[in-house]
Image (cartoon, rainbow, N blue to C red; front, side, top):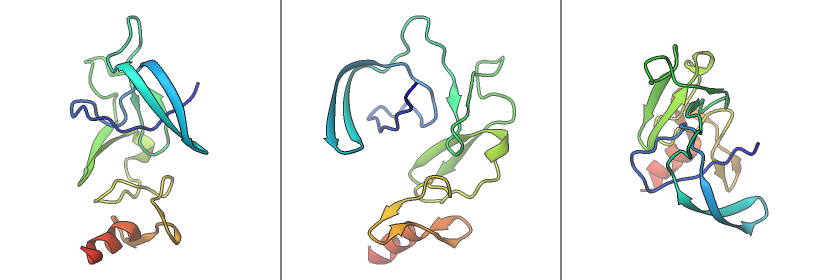
Amino acid sequence: MITLHFKTQHADIKEGVILHLKVVSIAMKSPGRWHLVVDDVTPLPGAEAGYICGICGITEPPGPDGLLPAGWIEKQYEQGSKFLCPECVDSQICRVCGCSQYEPCETESGPCHWVEEDLCSACANADRLS
C-alpha cells in the first residue's frame, strides 16, 4: 500500500478522508514528487471508506452512525482541517497551516519550529513579510 498526500480542487473532500481513486496517469515531476491524474474521486464500487489521522496516519473506518469514529475530532486551522485520532487529539498543530511536529513545514533554513504553542516559524515569518 502506498500513502499519497495530495491537494484537490473539490471543496467537499476533506483532508484525512480515505479515497480509492482510478488513476489515469502518473508522472515524476522531480525526485520524490509525483503528479497524478485521476479519472474520478468517488469511491470505487466495494471500496471501504474511512478516515486517516492527520498526525500519526492511523486509519479507522467510520463509526456506526457513518460519521467520525469514537474519540476522533476534526481540528480546524486557517487553511483547512485535519481528522485526529484519540491519541493525537492533544498534539501541537499550527493554527495557520496545520503542520505538526511529525509533518513540519520545509523552509529554506530547514524544518519549521514552534514560535508559539500553536504557531510555526514558517507561518510567523510569512505573516511578518506580508
